[in-house]
Amino acid sequence: MFKKRKQELKIPNHIAIILDGNGRWAKKRGMPRTYGHQKGVENIRKIAIAASDYGIKALSVYAFSTENWKRPKSEVDYLMKLPGEFEKKFKDDFKKYDIKVMFSGRKTHLSQENLDILERITKNTKDREGLILNICFDYGSKSEIIQAVKEIAQEVKSQKLSIDDITSEEIDKRLYTKDLPELDLLIRPSGEIRLSNFLLWQAAYAELYFCKTYWPAFSKKSLEKALVEYTKRNRRFGGIKS
Ligand code: IPE
Ligand code: IPE
Ligand code: MG
Image (cartoon, rainbow, N blue to C red; front, side, top):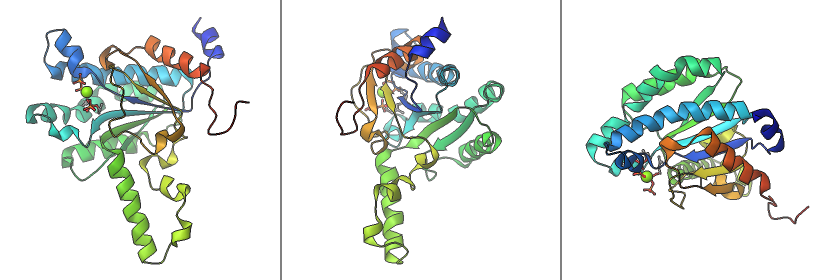
């Protein structure tokens, strides 16, 4: 049945998901918000494997934003433990599915311990050829674009680049996503209808999909629903319907 349904679907190369609703999911169960974060991390494993089964090439997940530091210290401290949890828990599974993990985000605010974990995971999975799981951690789209603009300004100043050379491609190649396929589908669970500083540049022509399910409850079935909807979309990229 899965195979038949899969054949009828248009499979995007690159999907991005905003992992939202952990706190509300936990609250509904009378549990602390941190319990929702724990279940949220576990769900990355399930959905990455599902995406890999569908033959999706890249999955970007928004796990911690540059604005999330505003949260109470106890919650931030808990969230900062999650890379370690992630490394311990999913090592073997990701190996089995040949999943390559990369990280997008600032490297200036994380602890040395977390930087080491991120580097270790990246290094240990770099030669894998399956799904690329891009974990956006201390990621903000504006900060990513500012960084690219600064690099370009520096190169113009040192005459490595002329102003006329500044193109969309010059920006693309300075973003964390430079080696990933173009973003096709951006999913936000939890009922919020906004991007919250996620992949603003990359989403220029992505299809947007919003659903009410909280992230810890987002299942393979929820992903399939998004793919069914994506299959129905008519992408024109500014052209006319073919
Ligand atoms: C997403 O869930 C996880 C992070 C932002 C780190 P939230 O913590 O935002 O959960 P809600 O939106 O408050 O339910
Ligand atoms: C977006 O969710 C960031 C992540 C899921 C990592 P938030 O919960 O932080 O977004 P807002 O505050 O509702 O816009
Ligand atoms: Mg939220």
